[in-house]
Image (cartoon, rainbow, N blue to C red; front, side):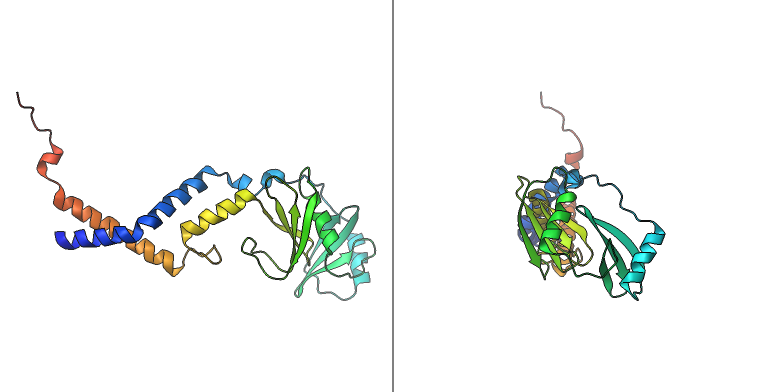
Length: 232
């Protein structure tokens, strides 16, 4: 048993050495970072609540035509307003002034929406229309990626169909996302903590600990627990 414990422990250690380092370093980095800062919550602008009287909303919906509306939301867009109607087929945007249906947000509108949600918003450097999810964004599509000229590398994602800010990203978030990927060993989507690779390494780590305890049992001697008397 001693020989088998020794072999399993040695080969398990060789297999796990690099991943143990990644687990330790990534766990340390994540423990040092404040989640509120990672999520750029300190950059959120305080917006006044947007609301319309119920009677006014009913009038606007009457203009919009027959919609199976499950919910309504008013979205500010600079000095204008949008009415977002939630339907079984997805959100529909209506003009907040006269209720007429309109298409998804344009790039300039997405930039305006993003800027008004950022406190002391810097200039917008670029607006990109996305039709597939990049590795740093897993929210609803289609969307706009609004890139700010910002020392923190701030990027805001805006949904085209719902006129909603769906995510905020920064250099700190990207660092956190990278070490999270190393920690859970999901190198594709970076969100599956039940992936086979992690499960394999976790099981090997348990075996490594068990064999280490076994080796400790075989190598301990009674004198390890008692102080030997000094020789005069």
